[in-house]
Amino acid sequence: MNADLLTALGLLLTGLGLLYAARQLRISRKIARGEFLLHLYELVQEHNCVHAALTDHGRWANKMGGPRSDEEWFSVDRYMGLLESLQVLVEDGFLDARTVDRQYGHRIAAIAGNDVIRQRNLVDQAYRWKDFIALWRLLEKEDSYCAIQDNEGDGKRWSSTMRMKVAVNCPDDEALIQDIIDAASAAGGGKIGNYSRVALVLRGYETWKSEPGATPHTGEVGKVSKEPSVRIEMQCEEEDVGSVMRAIRDLHPYEEPVIEVIRLESVG
Image (tube, rainbow, N blue to C red):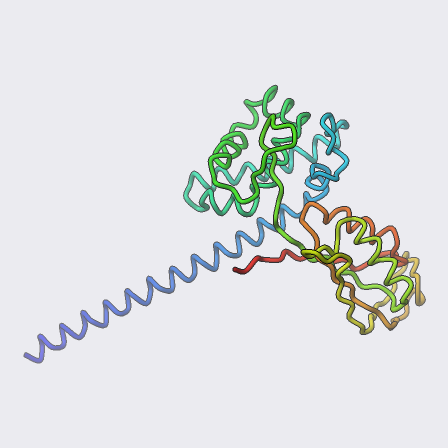
């Protein structure tokens, strides 16, 4: 009787141990997947200059606009090569099409919607981009939140609803603050519903040390500086991030302005 009880208790403990191990494994997989997705997002952000050129207000926005130089084509090919790796992850079951569509569908469609890139890479050199084409076709079948028809009705165009926050530190100078807000607003920032020029201004101070080779706006090379500063935060659509950042940089007095771009997740 005691032996049977001990055996039953041993089996129970073994079962509980297996359940605990399985739970820990699921948690570890979720953490690993989250870390991978974050790293992938960071890699994609490195190609924002190409994505910005493809948006409605970018330098390749007109019907015949597109990369011309070897350097521009190299940047486009690197960007497409990174995105087409998503097709392999979908095929392997690591990612599902809906997740890819929500995160990167607008980027893939922006590439496919550019006449110059589509003709060269997806038509003339289609044999090189089989995974990208397969992913593009797969996402076209999704009921995408960012899919709309273009004005001419001759193909599908996509527009992202993803919002971003652009934050910049600058000297606590009221005229400069208002100029930066005005410029960022003109570039597409600060629009929320029926309101425009929406910005948050937080006051504090900045400290830094200018190293040899720097040409600081304030302070001296080799010495620690501390100056009153403000942080300006404004929201914009993802497609306007490049324009907003350029507008800020053009006005900013610092040699290396501190500009942050933060993805905003929708709730509800």
